Length: 177
Image (tube, rainbow, N blue to C red; front, side):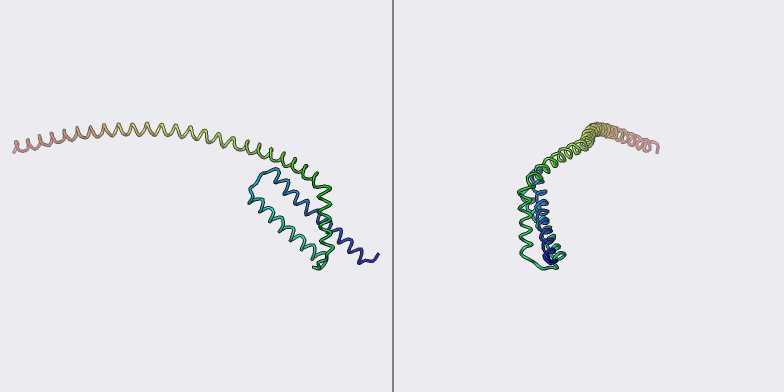
């Protein structure tokens, strides 16, 4: 076989593997979607990121392996690689990935629940402290209100007494003169 044919077969195999790799990466997104329910917006965002990655990856391969020359057999190799992956490994990969991601999801939930316990405890204690402080503030405000009433009454009494003493002094001055 000629070197040209060997290099073309090698490039075909690389694109075949690239097609399998593209489908494998897409299966990661599929497994994530089965494990974690997301909105349509997030799904569309994931798909957009995936296709941008695929486009960059394929353009890189075309320029590195084939000096930027696009050949029909490259697309056939990518499609055949994707189809062969889909019918042979995809089902197993998704099942295993969903199982592993399910375990990871449970572990993350448990870790978060453990980390939230101190926060809940703090909020509970903080609520009790707020209640105690509020009760004390109410009592203090009641005491201040009572004391201020007493002071006002005392000041009224003092002012009456003061007026009486003032009148008495004035009368004494008038009498003394």
